[in-house]
Figure 1 (tube, rainbow, N blue to C red):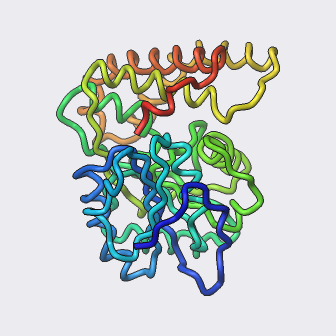
Figure 2 (cartoon, rainbow, N blue to C red):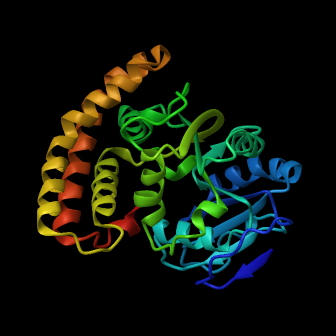
Length: 310
């Protein structure tokens, strides 16, 4: 295990370096992280992938019990997930950098599928994979999943639609990240959306993770408020008044638009309809929370909302 300082500079990918770096951000290391890393162990050995754990927990050595001996650890006590992913990208030395989360379980062959997808698209900057729901018992958990991940339910088309793939299963060629001076939120909220818009992000449903997360009813409402506030308030930049007004109007329209888009994504996948339909009222509630959060982020900035996300 290699310890890194809390503010590493962006590492340069080396031709002789690892073909893949897997960045896992964790704010509350626990059993889910151990499951994630155990699933990655054999895959990393088979592909020569580098593992970068970015630990934002306040407890010293909180992740050590889950780690392989060759893992790189970057510690930033109190860091939010946007800051942690930024630090992970800076510390990674692989030619491709893959991002996932501590509550995601990669499918067998995940690392190999990422490398195969990038080899098949050598001139494309980024590849996003599919996400399955690992928390199906409660209606609010199904809704929590659908609000964010409906567009990346398998099977996938080859190109993203209007909504950008979330950062739990995205990989980017290091050379495509090199020109950017990374700051918290830039990767998730500007770089990946830009790559999707200009046709430099493709989808590949051979790359699959299972997302397992349950917050309960009130917790889910809170998380989607904080997610909306963070996404609207980051990166921390001055937004012209006219653009702020346009974004506020867009936030008001978010609920009906995303509700329709979510159901459209479910309808394209007949196997998901029966599970999704009873959860749609909760989808609407969580979208309302997200929209209110976005408006708050546009008016007051992200505040402490990034710290509430995992």
